[in-house]
Length: 280
Image 1: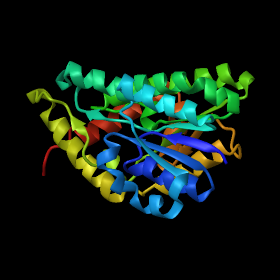
Image 2: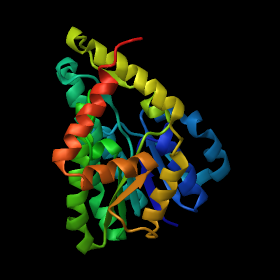
Image 3: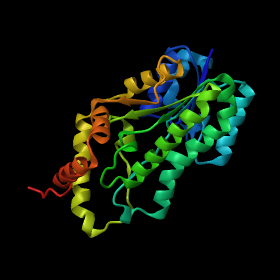
Image 4: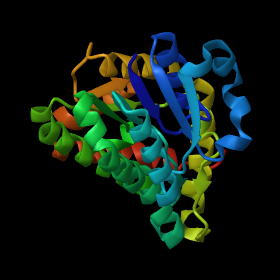
């Protein structure tokens, strides 16, 4: 029986992947912060699948907790797939983001998964397994008032593509899943910039309104993301980048196919109409 380790399983994509991997016959190591106090979040699969589901505490930014998870995997003896799903997000103008917020953004979204992947590479390489990074549409396009989050996902994209070439000769497949807007708990209550500069107030007001509209209209792509993850882990897909959602596909091709001389002015006009709209 093959084994997968998934980070960030308390809700959203991670929670969906736990169900899908178990349904497909995998042994699942599910990790989340403060797992001992939140086991009820996985009560249903625990009851249904019993000893095929292990729940461990992991804050990917905590070296001791990473080490404990790596030790558990090595004692268990095998790991066929690692899914780096845990993430955090801070929105708002760069000028208003604190240094602590900027560092936290990179620690959770980039350094944490990078260091966990590095530590588990011997096991993945032995199994000739798969490493999956959950990225975002914001991993290949910039967006106003989202610079820190975009930067963390751009970094993850560069890491994954480099590892794709680096590890392929060793039998390890590396992939990125890039979801578009999705109705999950992840974006419901993001961290907002600590500052409150007057110059950005109109933009921030419109950003809050935009997020509420998107949340109401966005589909829930949890099942699609989970199925793509299993397909990658089982070798039925060997793509580097897997986009989920029509918006993710449209933005990708707009970004890649339209020359900057056309794309940038169009994007600038579009964003100005959204973020500088005056209240009626």
